[in-house]
Image (cartoon, rainbow, N blue to C red):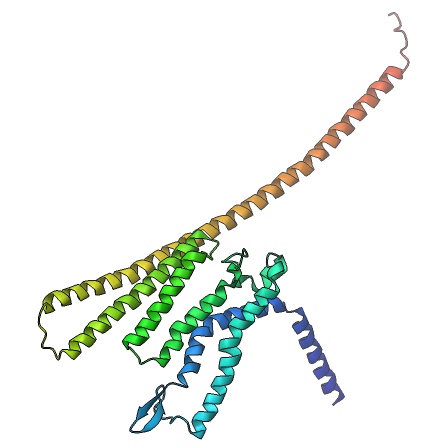
Length: 314
C-alpha cells in the first residue's frame, strides 16, 4: 500500500509539473478562438428553446414538437438555456469588451498580443477600432438569433435582417476598422452581398404575397414580371459566386505573400549567419598574417645582428 501511495504521489507530481509547464496564455487563446467560432451556432440553439408555436390551443416547442412549452420538463431546459444565455451569449461580448478596455494601454505590447492579439490585430489599436470584434459578435447574434422571434420567412423578419445588415454596412464604411486595406475591401464586399441578398429576398417575398392576395387573377405583365425576377435571381447567384471567388483569390494571395515573407526571412537569417562567419574568419586570417610578419621581422633582425666574418682569400 505504501508503494501504491508513493506511485500515486509520483504521478500527481508529474501531473503538476506538466500543468505548470503548459503555456496557459496559448491555451486560453485557443479556447477563446473556439468560443468565438461557436458563438452564432450555440446562441441560435439557446434561443430556439423559447420559440414556441400554438397548435390546437397548446404551445409546443418549434424545434422539437414532442416537447410542450411551459411545463416542468420544458422549465428545466429553459433554466439551463437562460444560464447559458447570460454566461455565454451575453457574457462573451461583454467580457471581451471589458478585457480590451482594461488592456487598452498595453495592446501593442508583445505579451498582450500573444495572449489575445487575434481579437484586435486585424483592426488596429487607434481610437476604438480594437472593439470592432464586439460589434461583429452583436451583428452575428442579431442576424442569427434575434430574427427567430419574428414569423419565419415573413416580410417583417426579412426587413429586420435587411436593416441590421445595412446599418452594419454603413458603420463599416464610416469607421473603416480594418488596418489591412485588402481585409477592409473584402469585408465591405461581404456586407454588400449580404445586404443585397436580404433586399432581393424582400422583393421576392412581397411579390409572392401580392400574387397570393390576388388569387392568381392578375395576369397583367405576368410574363415580364417573372422574367425580371428570374434575372434578379441570376444576379443574386452571380453576386454570391463572385464574392466567393474573390474571397478565395484574396486568401490564396495572402498565403503566397506570407510564404514569400517567411522564405525571405529565412534567407536573410542564413545570409547574416554566413556573413558573420566570414567576418569571424577575417580576424583569424589577419592575425595569422600578423604573426607571420612578426616572425619574419624577428628572423631579419637576428640575421642583421649576427656577426659577419670576412671572407678568406682562396
